[in-house]
Image 1 (cartoon, one colour):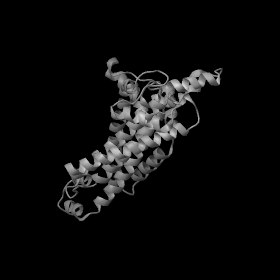
Image 2 (cartoon, helix red, strand yellow):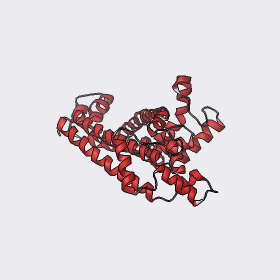
Image 3 (tube, one colour):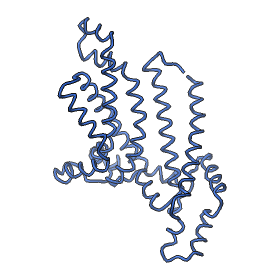
Image 4 (cartoon, one colour):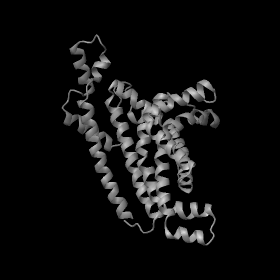
Length: 313
């Protein structure tokens, strides 16, 4: 196990280096010039050139990339072109809303999706099963921003049950914190719920057809025990896999959800940085998101050994 984790950590560093190269080149080749944005519409070419020189944007790409990677290795993600503050500081300032939204989404999604998947498998072929699967297909098909606006219209504008947008920090009270997270977390988690529910149902149906399940039924074991203790435990590997893969959905959805609900998180910071062509922020945030995704999948692989003792690395 230790050797496997060490190999994965080395491969993670390699993957992060490739991500860094790709993001750096992609941003430099994309249209738009941060120096021109800073200078304004009435700026002269000489003024823009002076700003580019001040920011180091007139250096060749190899020099710029080496300078950025050297800072990353030392734990520095660079300095924001517009705010002139360290990217790490800006990310940490926006971290609580993003972590709160992601944590609430995971809690709601995994709990609800596994419950729906197990229920659908237990009632396979019934109207409950068909209804749950139709809802899961719709949840996976409708765009996140559309779901967000629909929920805002129903629960905030029409019913006035929940806040329209914004975020309340934990310092302002747990109830306010939760009330501001319910709609965004539901919006972000709907596609995630649909994905996990479908995989849970398929995995449970496969396990429920095994001989040891029929033996348990013949021995008179009650249905909840069969479903939870025997079937769900042995169906856990694909479920955990899709939970790890689904983190990519959350990372992409955070950007959209925070924009729709005006949450001052890392996703909103990314959108603002893209609008202004603030290269250091964009590069830093994408690198962090990529690292989180790789680490989550490493944790999922390690979790396999606990779910299935036959798996060894």
